[in-house]
Amino acid sequence: SATNLNEAKNEDYRKDFVELIPDSDQKACKACKKEFNVLIRRHHCRHCGFIYCHECSRYWLVLYYIKSHPSRVCIICHKEFEKEKTQLPMSLQENLSLLTTP
Image 1: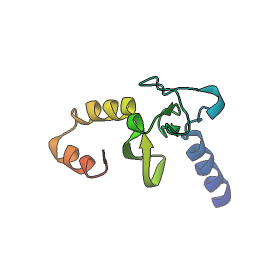
Image 2: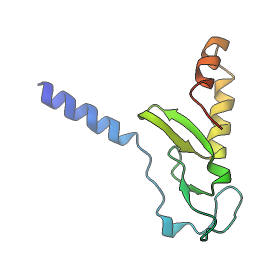
Image 3: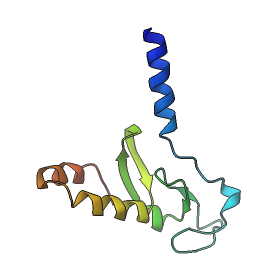
Image 4: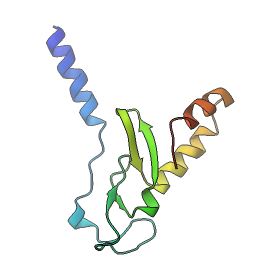
């Protein structure tokens, strides 16, 4: 039935979300190793789920599983996205560049 189909789609959609590392499990930025404190705040990467400082998570991408708005991603995931993007045709690369902001 239509209801079961919608429930199945919603379940698949939820599986795509990344499990975020609890704040208490990570005391420092995964990339630069700066310890978090009052001035250096934690930010979760919405792609890998790890925690980064502001400087290492200043990138935004429209993720396929969170299409409603751009999501914060870390420098590592952003670099991976940029590497994969260069393997696409130029017309697609230009369109994808419009969806990212440093």
